[in-house]
Image (cartoon, rainbow, N blue to C red):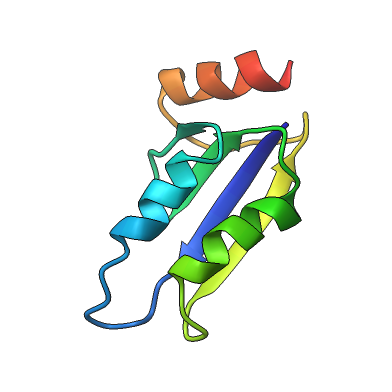
Length: 88
């Protein structure tokens, strides 16, 4: 399953390195857009959120959704290939 994780990190001066490492630990990942990650994982959105929540504050926002075959946008070819090979 491919999950899209997008966030708005609002805590000024906070070091979010642990959040990025936690994201990478969730499965195979792709990160081309500044505040968006795609995760190829067997975890549910709730499980991923629970893994990431300790690394953000209540001032931050995060959204985790499953990507299906219905998607569109403008990305580099390697990004589309990454998505297509994992969604089917």
